[in-house]
Length: 119
Image (cartoon, rainbow, N blue to C red; front, side):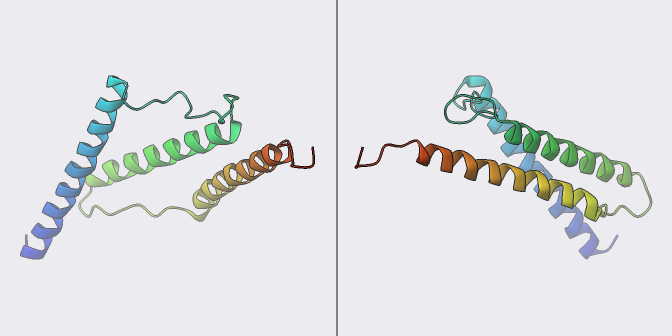
């Protein structure tokens, strides 16, 4: 193993340890009650948000699938990052777009129901 390959390997493992440390820190704060997840998939008024839920589920499914693909490639002679198909990126973009549009609609409906100074 060359020095460059070793440096890449060590850097990769260090990155994984750092990200895992952040994940553990966030999970600890969630379990302690310092991070409130009550509004994770709901709007400010407490109603359920299908677009938030869809975006959350799509993100977790795609992220988990990519992690599994990376782990599966680690057993091969030449481990590489998987190529993400354009369709997957399009679906994630559509999901994010749906969330953004729903936020815009919700905001415009909220602004429309505000009383004006003429009222």
